[in-house]
Structures are given as C-alpha cells and as structure tokens.
Image (cartoon, rainbow over all chains, first blue to last red; front, top):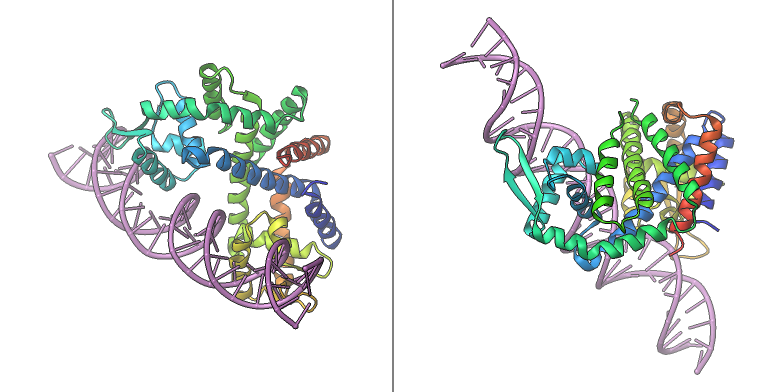
Length: 164
Length: 164
DNA sequence: TGTTTGTATTTCATATATGAAATATATGGA
DNA sequence: TCCATATATTTCATATATGAAATACAAACA
C-alpha cells in the first residue's frame, strides 16, 4: 500500500469532526507535499556524487534552459521559486565551485549577471544521463495520456493558486 | 499569463539541447515544486495570526485526524513528511505553546506520546474557518470531476515515486 | 541639478531542517 | 541471565531558508 493511506485515513476523520472541512483540496495539498518531498530527496540522492544539491541543480538548469546561459538573480528567484536572499547564497556556492560566473551588468549597474561557466556546462553533460534516468523512472508507470492530463490539471491548479 | 510560462520555455530549450531529456516528467516535477511553494506560503500567511507555521499546523492536524488525538513522533514523521529530528523541534515548540502534551508510553518506554491538548483543540476550532476558506479558494476554479481526476493521477504519480 | 521614488542585490540575524552520534529501552536468542 | 541487535527518540553541529534592513543604482520630475 502507499505511504499516503494513513494520511487519507486521517483526512476522513477530520472531515467527520469538521463538516465544513473540504476534503478534495485538502487531499490535493497533502499529495503535493508528499510528492515534493519524494522528488526533492530523490534528486538530492542522485546529485550527491557531483557535490551539488537539488536547489543548486535547479539554478544550473534554469541557466542551461536560457539562451546565452545567463540570468539575473531576480529572474532566477522567480524561475527557481527561491527568495532572492537565497539565490545570493546558492550563487555564492556555485561560484565557489566554479560552475557559475558572476559579472556586473553594463547597461544597469544594479543588476548582476549569473552565467554558466564552461565547467558548469561540462558538469551538466556529466550528470545528465543519471538525471534523465531518474526522470524516466519517476513516470515509468504512467501512460503518456495520463502524464499529459496530469500536466494539464496541475497547471490549472497552479493558476488557481496564483489568483490571490 | 501564469508564472510557470518562463519555466516551460526553459524546458523547451533544455530539450532542444539535450535530446535525451524527458520533457514530461520534468514538467511534472517542476509543477510540483511551484505548487508546493504556493501552498506553503499561503498556509503560512493564513496561520500567522495564530502564531503557528505550516509544519506546526500539519502536526496539529495529523493528531486531530487520529482517534484519541495521539501519535508517536515516528508516526508523525511519516505522516507529516518530516524527519524525526525535526519532529522533536516542532513538538517542543507546540508543547511550549501548550497545544500539545508529551507523555511517556506505558507499554514501551522508548516511545513518547504526543497528544492534542484542550488548548490545541480550541485553536483548531478557531482557525478552521480561515483554513476551510483557503482550501475552498485553492480549488475554486476546478470542477469536482477535475479535482477527482487530479487526485487519482497524483496518487499514481506518488506510487511510482515510491517504487525505489 | 537635486530630490524623490522605485528596483536589484546583498548582508545579517534568525528560523528551520538535516545527518550523524548519543541515549535509552526492547527483543530474541545463547 | 547476559549479550547482541534492533527500535524510538533526542542532542548537537551544520546546512539551508527567510524577513528585514542596508546598499547601490536608476528613473522620473520639479
């Protein structure tokens, strides 16, 4: 059985005790929490041999997914879902490791450019097979139609959460 | 437009640069991360007037959803998705606030029982209207059939993640 | 020009989370 | 009984994340 069963059981008790408690959104929220934890832990374990964390990986991949391999801290904060203070720390760590370069912007000197270094690119090429294998495994049990449907519904859910 | 659009755009670039990179699981993983952040932040904001955090709320609700309002730290760790060391800290904090009581187990003296106190129950009754309103809002844009389908697919995804 | 207001980033104090070791107890044989 | 091994929890050092203040620059405008 899934590790989620006891949680679901507890939700049932809660609904009995609080008739106004809306089961459906509560289930979804708890599923998201469980999923996030699994994804986070699995990514950290996979990346351990390269000495980087899941949040650091996310920063690298956001840069990798950008034309020119360069973003500002504020763009990274938005993209990676981290607070800007946290981006500073993660960028410091990645710069120390030589994976990212920090330069001042010419046009707006308040801005900072964070770019993937040659070493950063090389590391991405190195861990990519392990990451791809991890991602494949994570949806191995699902049909393409199911993942597509899940993507659609998650986007709708996210849009709703962004309303207020 | 959704805050997710730039992330999706970056995934497209990544797929172009790494042909083996599987888009579908990557999208799902990133959606889960964004969703988790939103849910976490919204819950913290809602709970602020009561001086408790989202993880503390989760502990209270796990106890509330249990017959007898009592769980061990290890059960709570599993249920709430926290490491046991973290449960100790959260339980300390909730005990300090008088919301939870810690007692030693009679049958197995290695075990500790964490129970909702009268004050803990009262606080749940107090914040419940705000929490219900938050949960209702979070799925307000979705039809019941959609949330049910989303629940089904998320469970399938979670089961898959639990395989290894 | 000088002033005000706004934006980008960092710093710092504090809060939160984790892994590994330490402590205490239970359980199952020899 | 004694010992080895396993389980439950806590402690502690360290890693990670946050909010609020500080810094630096930009943009708008009198």
